[in-house]
Length: 608
Image (tube, rainbow, N blue to C red; front, top):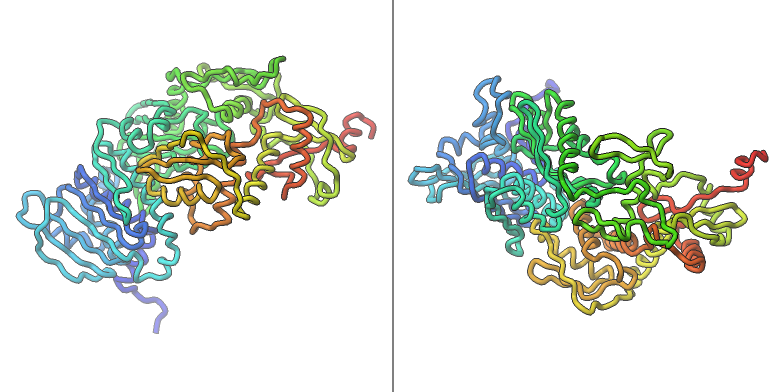
């Protein structure tokens, strides 16, 4: 008997499903796109167990006739391709008949639909790719697709599905993205606890951003628009001081289709190269309008990737649009050329500086002082946003002040066996200079204090004794619509970390905070916790939760740069640092200190 065999249609569908259906969010994506192509103005989504148990999408679109309902689940059936030339003229997102067979092959699916003008509707039930029944039914105009028990017949794939909260976060993020792209459509989402997302139709994208992400997010966005020939880009991007730890706040759409594209992503980051530190990302909502013949949307089975015929023109257009958007907006931060100079009186250079109508938070203002200079071979300078020219400054400061070059300890034992160095003073109110028998040390006071606070917070949480300070007036934090599904888990994290928090409707009320974080920006910490919940791919682990909370508390509560310290305070910080688990790196992995040893000194003084 030969080795090569023709796969059965069921197995072929299940294999094909792996390319289109990776997780419940993939089902949500395909069904939302179908509903949008069906001219729907209201889309209702139900998610049970994060979509693992059930994904139900109902719309009020044009619906389907009985013949189309049956053909929608046949292989190679489509509503948008008639001949090969149509591949260059695709305008729809993916109307019924392409992903449906793949979804049906790995789930128990029921579709009900009635076309506009028909007297009755059609119901089809499919289990594991096998049609169980097709019958006439009463149904309002529109379509409902009910997908249950995803991957019930493919255990190899089901075991890779994450926890319900993780799967819910992926679906919610995707729904929010389509809500932004289609502000004229009403989106409703519910799960076991009731409504978790509601976005009634609004007039424009700006109103939708406010609806989904809130006023603070919208206030920190700059509009931009640029056109070149038949290509146009427009959207909103964040001011440089609004920084995120991941790319989840970057949404890209090409002709209304949500995509992931390296050309677009690289162009956005190129526009921010001298404006934000490495490892941080802006929030960007970017829309590209381009003739369909200039793109290829069939690069990826799920059509999340795209190919441009002229990617270099698009790259330069996006970068120019964002640059011009900053110039046109009066709210652009006005970075001083020598922003780290400390006056004789010891006042921080950022203390009285206003950045447009937005006064930066103290922790962000201090950081901005180190974001302007950049490393360019042998020079350090700043970029002029209006002319694009570069001015060379005589102040030599690294691009990332937390990644200062210099010597390091060869082994942890070396620092463990030594006494803490003796504090001598500060350099630019940001770096502690100390000495001991090993040499001269330069210590970044912010990250050193981060390490001290981090170890302290982890230790307190491990033993269940986190000193808290009650607030005279409870602090209410509004949770953006798109993230309200995370409120129960957020409360667990906050209360585990020493906060006293409870839900009040769609808000979080903070009644007490950890003592070490009493002066920190609570809103910023809560936002970081929410971002951490969004990107988490694993089931909640108590140890990891504690570490994540400790990192946020330490970062926000630590002594800032451009802060003068007494010699006693410097010595206390050094002594505490030497008692920590890892005195050489902060919780983010950045270096805390470096040393100029005897050999370095002798070599520089030409004694050896």
